[in-house]
Image 1 (cartoon, rainbow, N blue to C red):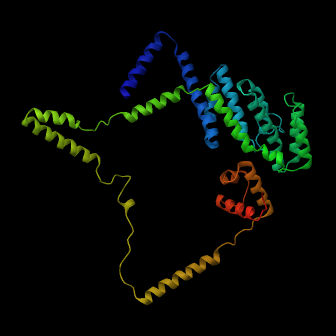
Image 2 (cartoon, rainbow, N blue to C red; image 1 turned 30 degrees about the vertical axis):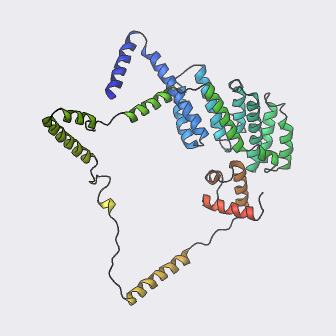
Image 3 (tube, rainbow, N blue to C red; image 1 turned 180 degrees about the horizontal axis):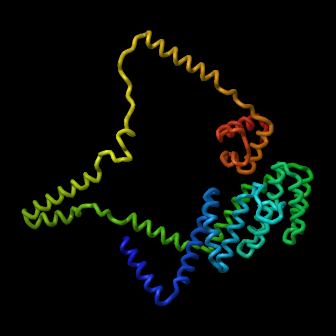
Length: 370
């Protein structure tokens, strides 16, 4: 297979020298690679793998700087929108020159430029509403009412949003300073993520951008179907030659024995470096009898060690009203069960996701949350 690939590469190179320039070929190849990275970014966003998303984004930006064209600009704008949504609940991240513009406010501005990419008008309006609501909701959840008021003022001063019907409703909510208002909960950040994923599904269905992805899948499938080079001759050929003559049959039996020995060699049970003897040693228990006195001494020593551990154990920290509030906000934002995502948003004094789950169960049983 490697020789076949090299032959194809040599043929392509010789053809390039004659009819087209290498720069033109390079542009096409770079466009394909950019399409593959765009599909990867969309997949990572849909899978909530935001760490991988940020890693791929830096490579995508490098390719964008070397390419020109409408398709490249469109995909770059979509990725810019996704990046702002990913950082939507982080008010200290800036995408605009104005420091007061939060990531979701900037996302709303970019989203208005992507209207032509959305065939479903109701989907476009739905995401626009979610961006407006969450731009205010995130500020209220962080306890920054002034930032929420600034967000509303910014939307009023922008022509695309100044006449939107939600502006008046959001102004009333900001005045009430209620981060748990039913209207804000119904247009949650989690709903914004899910609706954006629906937009990506529709866009990728219309603009696949998966040429390299399909070719890579074919290559992997062909490599999986390729026969093993170390396999011996098929049994059918051995039996056919054995039927010709007794002498040939004996020779074929010898060949078959050699083939079997080769297979045994491949399946050798000897330890390799990665399975060294030292790493595979098993612990054993001595069967020597001990006297009752020795047994009592051992048990007393263990009890003393246990007592020491109990003395040095830290008392459990109490859940404060502030931590309960963080937990309630996190569940409303990300949904029940997504404890690892909630831990990323707030400082819970070293608590784990299991502790958050247990505390949420207690709050539910005591009817402190709905």
